[in-house]
Image 1 (tube, helix red, strand yellow):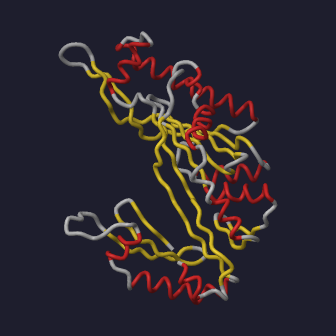
Image 2 (cartoon, rainbow, N blue to C red):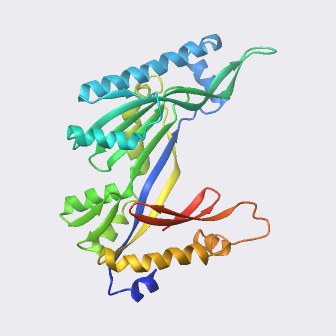
Image 3 (cartoon, rainbow, N blue to C red):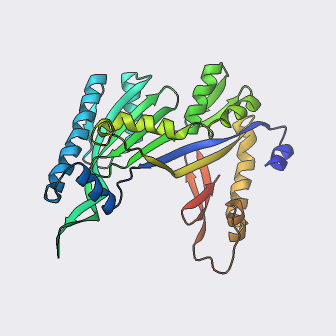
Length: 314
């Protein structure tokens, strides 16, 4: 990257590397049958009452979500068909002039991993099973993280997903410090002080993430206050995107060069190169598939290199 920037120094105003889209998954220590059986025993819930107990707790989550939306004066919508939820939430925020706090709550039925009661020899046993249940999506304009959402499964084990965006967080950090910038959707086109902004971006990863994510979880799962008192979520990074933006002086300066870069990346890069980009080496026992994918998209085009579930794109 340094060689590239040096070569095009007259056309580049700076670079910025920061986290982009992040999805965290929160798991309670109830995700396997034995733990669930212990939980029911502690709560004095009989095996035969498992279904009724599960549905009762699910109803509490749904009722709390509707009440939270009503209290904030925000819409609660059931989505019966496939909808781009992020776009819908942004449209609601723009329509209603929301600048901070809850934007809306969506509910929709999706596949989930939960439990069932299995009968056979001896006493009934709890077994994991895939079912469909109601999920709740809470969309916020958070004071610190900007546009984000929290998704909670209403059936045990109440898995939570938190989405945040590093560019959203960084924009708010610049706003606090009076640093000027130009932004188009999820990209910065110009930065007043790229060096200072990079130092701000480097503060994102060391944030106290467990405490931050616990705060989001408490907002959407009221059971943590009573039925699940004493339980905490274990957090794992489910998806992470890290971007490097090269800021050019103008669209004209980039246009001709970008076409050449796309052509080179599509036609000249080999599997070994893609693995190198992703910190791997090609060896004879590799059983996956490596792909180069070029697509024309508004307002231009992009090339993406895939290795299994990992990718890098330009």
